[in-house]
Figure (cartoon, rainbow, N blue to C red):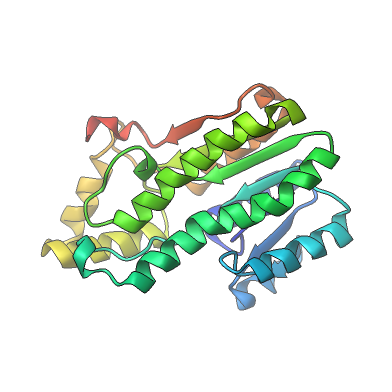
Amino acid sequence: MLVTAAASGIGLTIARQFSETGARVMICDIDRDSINVLDRFETCICDVSSIADVDELFDKLETVFGGLDILVNNAGVGGPIGPLESLTVSEWQHTLEVNLYGAYYCCRRAIPLLKKAGGGSIVNLSSTAGFYGVPNRTPYVASKWALIGLTKSLAGELGSAGIRVNAICPGSVEGERIDQVITAESRIRGLPEEMVRTEFVQSSSMTTFISADDVAALALFLCSSQGRYISGQAIGLDGNTEVKW
């Protein structure tokens, strides 16, 4: 299997949980220092927004593994935070290039391998931002909505080949990224960070953040035999943020 952007955070947690079940795992990341110390997995330095890097990644994967049965498109960036008119074109482009084009580049190379294997699973990491509009996060939200569209369309294309395609849509996941988002929002809105953090927690009816382990467990289920008939789904993993919207 392949997990993108897995030198840390959600990606690394997914890679570890799959590895513990006996899966052979390759991970890629742009963080050279972090990925080079992870000797538990096959590794590759890769910027998924670069089609040349992705081609090199899959060439290495085919050489080392000889094939592929699971792809987890985890790579993503939070993008800039602020009113749309204040954002630069390059900020917009970079967010879409990583979050959407990166998934496309990987799917483009993975699908022939999955077909050759007789089937498999693709899991795209979207977000609850793919369900609702979020002020001041337009490029991020646009990319996550697009990932759900990609997921549902690919599921329709690939079902007859035995390939399942699903999207996991986490809410606020504990860790460095959500801390950065909260800091940025507090600055833009002129509110204390703790007030913004409380708003985030209270945005779900279960009043909680989720963990990377929760995300990894769902990915494992979707790729297992227990999830063999689940495809084309965008699954919220968020403690029910619908209560906010």
